[in-house]
Length: 362
Image (tube, rainbow, N blue to C red; front, side):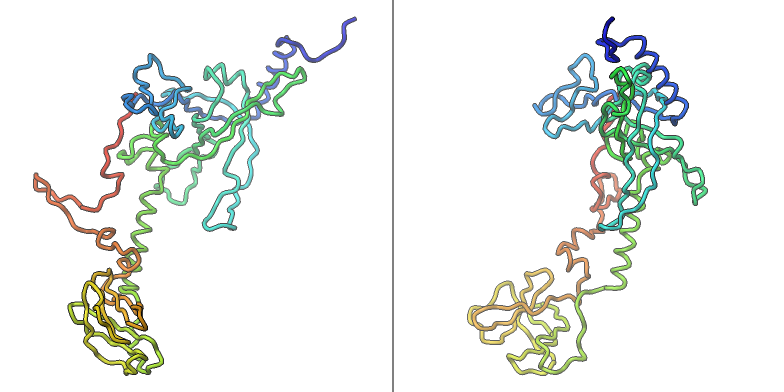
């Protein structure tokens, strides 16, 4: 009589019986998952860069090709226009916000989904892999506070995939495939699914928070410029010489009219003419004041011992953004350039507006 053994060197009828039961269990208890199958990178390179193979010369591009070997990235991805439907199961958890760090972070926004392996291969032609995109209809929020907002499904990208530990049957053959999925954003990789950003009704614009974040940022800057038109303090109420120094502002046009209060001169706050220039004078006396108008903003120095010490910056005639960034004229550039056809183009533009959008190669 042969020894009893559950393990067989080949998949026997016992395996297929167990596989059919497991498939029915996943199909009965699982939720619908729509699969956007990743086909491979787009053939957009000409082969001039060794790190970027000329994929266009290949007879057929597949999922194993890499667009950029240097960064190991596939930024321009092609997805199947056919959407496949599978059933999968996962443990639903509460999405608690983590407040232990700066900002808000979701602790449970990563899903570990289990699917039936053979059913997946029958429908997709392969197992799910990193790069595939999942669409979960059961996470569609159709009760939004804004009745005019678009209600869409939740999209996830497969980050990793492997055999499920609980998916091995009594005969030691695997039946289930486990994937790790994270939410997608409006990135370049998913443009084939989310659509053209120039289309107002595209999924990209529905998922993106870019315009709202820019609107909030501009409102914060406008509020700061109104509430704080300049940096520093206007300390005209201080007149005693114990305050070192008290600066109310200077214009830096050759000679500057400022209000100073320094112990070196034992002076009471008043108006003094302070010399200014692009470099310090050679023979300076103790307590001498000098304005360097080659600084942005202009800076007031006092000579003590054998050094020039900074006293204050001219923050009364310049905005706070110029003081903070030292490049306010560049960052807050509102000028326009007249084109050859008579149009006006803003000189300050976002990079996304300047560069030409890459065209899909499919």
